Length: 251
Image (tube, rainbow, N blue to C red; front, side, top):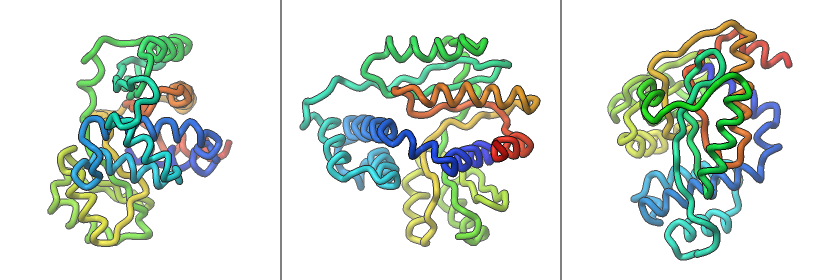
């Protein structure tokens, strides 16, 4: 997972996120609307909504946009089409499994776009369940090591249900059950630890390593999927080595 985290950091440094600010706001608004629809508008009791709003604030989404998205989710704002959450399964090149998490107003369009990206690289869509079993749904936190004492973070995370805590020198990463997200998040904040990333995601049970050039090609496929308007997140079982990260940073 640390390789994927560093990949995200490299993309942020290169300004990829800033270049797609409008697209990011659209994705965040959909995430907020879905969370509000499923669990109500109270941020304190609806941890998925709280997570979505915190992420939106972290990306400097205007307050009015956030409030409008919440109202859309609860039905107070009738504008727009109904949003549906769908997770598609497939394979990129070299047999790398991918889960594509989508929030869409037109699932036929979304499916067609995903299929096009995968088929173009020699990959394919997969039947429901044929890929997802290779992943675990978890809560995840990433804290810069320079800003935190590992022993304190470790103790706090374990006491609040975390399954695993790692430190690669740059980031302390916390992995735990989805149901423990709110408890771990609250305790981290109370202790003054501010994660760079915190969310619910799919973690591969086993990563697959490829040669550097093949790894880079698969990463290009993942980035192509991430660029689609309806895509929220793309998860894979691709192992990203230090050699690959070095090649990315030198570009």
